[in-house]
Image 1 (cartoon, rainbow, N blue to C red):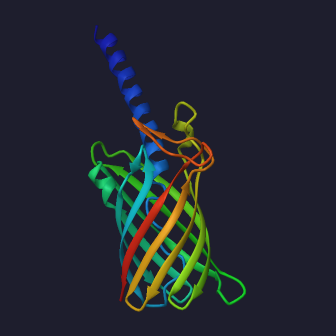
Image 2 (cartoon, one colour; image 1 turned 180 degrees about the vertical axis):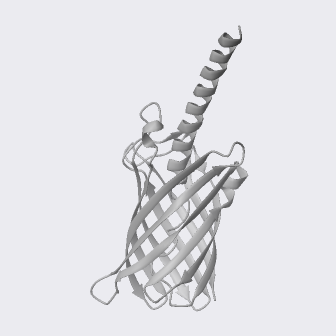
Image 3 (cartoon, rainbow, N blue to C red; image 1 turned 90 degrees about the vertical axis):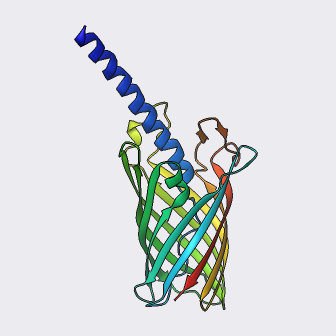
Length: 230
């Protein structure tokens, strides 16, 4: 009898674990770009930026508010460090932290845009059972800077090292996103607006919700941010 119940418990635990993994894959696909691109044009050396972000990807007939905070520091005139946390994820029982570096590759001028490259990682820790996921990410930004005005086109992708653990063929090694935005950076303030396409390479679903898509794939939505520079 003990062995029978142990086997039942094992099967139930395995099924629960698979459902948890599936949930992580689906929800992380939506949260993969839950803020405007952190830094497009690197900050000047020594400048510190503290900001708040609001992502609004489309879900059902409305949008899902995703609130976050971040910190950025100009390590040099061509390299900026950033780190952030998502407050909405915390409310939902997940500690979501991200961090990385943005490096200027080409300086902008009148004829050609500037180009920057970013690399870093996102981590998820469940406050319920301690489940942990780490997603490396990298991206590239093309930006035009005219005085305090910054226009950008960005492409970013997450890498899921545990994609093969997902059931129902929902796992993917890469979770790309694409965006176009505008920033107003003047002295001590920066305002941000960006429209993003999320995972436009596959269908996206989260439990009991419908995500309006782009030609049947991915998700989409507006993302906003405001920051102070010191």
